[in-house]
Each structure stands twice: as structure tokens, then as C-alpha cells.
Image 1 (cartoon, rainbow, N blue to C red):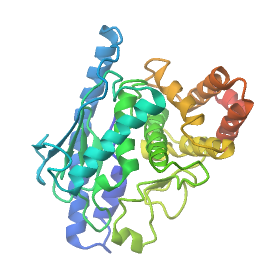
Image 2: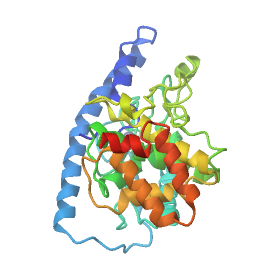
Image 3: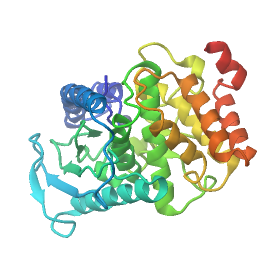
Image 4: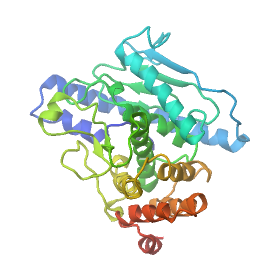
Length: 350
Ligand SMILES: [Zn+2]
């Protein structure tokens, strides 16, 4: 099910076998891939627990004004959560970034979408930094965030990416809303929602409109050896198949194959979101982002959701929210058409 890292596992495996890289860098990639596998099991348990809790409880109403933000230092070990850090001033630069950017993600969800933390009930947002030795990943493990320092060759410190932080915390939001599984279409949607909200968070922090945004994922965590190979990002929502991406993706829904890693099947819904935002213009989080958020949070759990079904819900919600502004629905239609899921194509698949 859900690995929910920022870097796909096959990229780490490939790097660990790349003869052009020095042995210590290859080892760091191999170690990260191995640990990732173990953490995946933890996530599956956490999703099951969340799912059971949703079934037996009435929805919890928001109580806390703002969630607590906590940061721990693993000291380059894999023991969680690590040593508590009292506040942004008490730690190093990674700690300060983890405190500041997590606080900003909480503010983004609160101010823009009216959401109170990951679970919409004020859940503490917990992070551990300096996880592992030259660990090449960041992840949401089902209950908290983990950030590696990177190997300083392919990747640098993962707290350097505000979109990375927004991406991982959004996996928590998805776990507490659509509860998407991490395979096939649902997995691709799970990854795509994290990229969409991670990128929107980055744009919101900079006050950028859709035309000014870079739409890159992970551009701030790419290290010098990867840059030497003209790699500038992990993924590009505007150009998912681009050669400048460390993990290029398909652009068409028809290219998604059964069992594909969700970091690749997220390409078409990423491109649909980008195209809709770019076509409409203005700030991504004000209209298109609002439609995506409502599709994510108002229909209840849909663990096996298909991408065409998600597309239809965006059409439905756009009509409900912005019926008087047909530009919004038209832009969304252009988005899905760009990936082979126009209204008629979607109907044919369904
Ligand atoms: Zn992810």
C-alpha cells in the first residue's frame, strides 16, 4: 500500500547500481531504499487504524485554535522520534526549517481551506529531522514526518524543500479524508494530491499566480551530482515527461499500467491540475485548489477511487461552487482533456 515518500524507490535502486557514482553515494541510496521498505509496513498499519477510527466515531469537531508543532532530532540514527527540540531557536537550520515550514503548512490549510491540522481536529504535527545516515528521502510514516539529510551528491537536506514538506503533510490529510490506497489509480491520485497541495503551498508562500509559479516538485533538494547531469527537479507538474526530471512521468491516462508506482501514475492528474490552473490564471489555491480540496474532503473515504471518477467529481464540485463562473469548469475540462480524460473519453472508460 502506501510508501508516501517524496523519492520513488526505483530511483534509489537505480542510483545504488549506477557505476558512475562513488561507492559511498551508492551505499546511501541502497540504505535508503531498504529502510523505506520497512517504514511502508508502518504506514499500512496507520491507514488501517485511521480507517477503523473513522468507522466507529462520529466526526470530531475542531477544537484547538492551532495545532502544536513539535520537532525531534534523530542524531543520524533511525530511532524515533529522537531528542525533543524545544523551539526553532534551540536547534540547527534543519530544525528551524522544520518548525517554520510545518507552522506555515498548518496556516495554509487553516487560512485557505479552513482545515484544522492534518485530521481537521487539531492533531499535533510532529517531525523528526536528521533521520538515518545520509538518508535520501522524506516521508509521512502514518503518524509523523521524517526528514533525511541527503547524501549531498544526489540530494541535499530534505527540509530545504517547502514543497516537500507540504507534499508529505498532505499525505496525512489524504489519510484522514479520502483514505486512498497506494496502488493503481488510487495510488496515483494519492501522490498527485500531495504534489498539487505541495506546489500550491509553495506558490502561496511566495504569493505567486499560476503563470509565475515553477510547478516543479523537489527543485530545492536536488544535489550537485544530479545538477551536473542537468537534473533540476524530481517532477515537473507542467512537463511530467521532461528530461530535466529525476523521475519523469507519463502524461496520458492511457499510459498508466496496472501496478505502476504511484509516483508515475500521478503524472496525468498532476498535468490536469496544472493545465486547469494555468488556463484559468490567477492564484491556484483560490478556485481550482478549492475544487480539488472539496473533492478530497467532502465525499467520505474512497480507498479505491479511479482517476476518471475523481475527474467527474471535480466537474460536479466546480458546478456547485462556481456555477456562476463557467471559466472555472471550462479550465478544469481543459485540464482533463490534456491527459485524455475529456468528458466523452472519461465516459467511454467508465
Ligand atoms: Zn508522496
